[in-house]
Length: 96
Length: 456
Image (tube, rainbow over all chains, first blue to last red):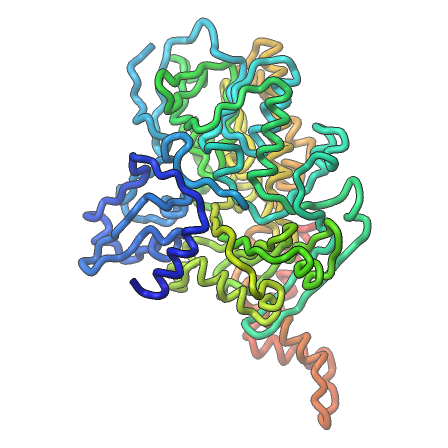
């Protein structure tokens, strides 16, 4: 693991999550592969969107802030299916 | 009851479930979201003697919430006598700075007053889990039923389209009510589902990202020049690589919070991530001495509805009201950054309007219209209407990129002693700096005029 990724993991380890069984966001890589902007890669504050070598996006919902930024910046029709995590799950900010 | 059509998950594009007009409602009022708007609404409904359920999707109020750090409490005068004795404050803001920077320069207007260090105070820093929990607690004391860990996944409508309740993600989770108040935050899926945003420009949001850093209380006092519960709030312009937005730094009791607010589309355009902008800000020569050695306690982020008055949705429907961030009631106007106060105000009026409508047994759109009237007569819509042109002005290219550099170079030209050369005349200096940065004098004049008109 790169130093930068380790540093980012340390950053995310300061945040409390109660991860839901159900992924509340899913990504359709068939749409992502044709995306030229990949704004999500830069804009997601939790860095959940990682570009893969085949032009797709590797996504993990588990440490999501539920902010909605990906949903705001995504230009791919149907690339994202977005909902809130089930009640009580997801992020719990203490110092917001 | 008709078959459940919703997906059972709250998100964009959810379709409302149509139900037969319920003969008896579960409660008088359902409030969705136990943030400042929702809790103020539930408090006023409960105080009027009506039954109210306050739904919160997080495990506790405030758990999904993040803000830029300062709450302005005077709106609470109408809700809680001597509220300042109860508000869970980190520090009272007695020093307010506006800092304009380039990568190597900073020009600060720094204001402090004793007046803000005693009742009724002005602004306070607080953690949202404390602040939102306190407000929700007031609603519960008044008789509201707080139901945490529960998502309102969609609306229930009767055959005429009037909203008669919400579907939740609990088993048998349909709740019916005479009025639903949507205080479900910036993404406002319920308001969108209700059609309140039809014909409105969308996507006027900025992304706020924040680090809270542990520092000993005495170190904060020394670095920021305060004592006791006095605190500092610094708003920063020019720290976002030209991406529309700004930065902030404020003091908690034994931590400081530092962060940026940016147009999310600008991040990809400049190929930079939010935490990298925070790291740059923390390394800036004007900021580094203030945050040095701070240990990261929590990283957080949230969207902010910054579009102002012209992006607000319809606020009243049949059996339905919208308040707070869900109604884009955030004021991000350069020198003013406010949201919690608008949420509390709007929630309070929504609660009163709902209570009056329930008492009169007319919960249709006309029956709830007193909400818009109360908002229009108050600061909630008054401030937003007055400052409707400001977001466009402060998020423009010149204000974001050119003016910070121009002002810093002007300050440097004025204060730098270039002996044996004589001092330059002020006008000559202004012309030279404007030329350096390719800014035309007539654009400056035009922006000053727009500013005077917009802030006037």
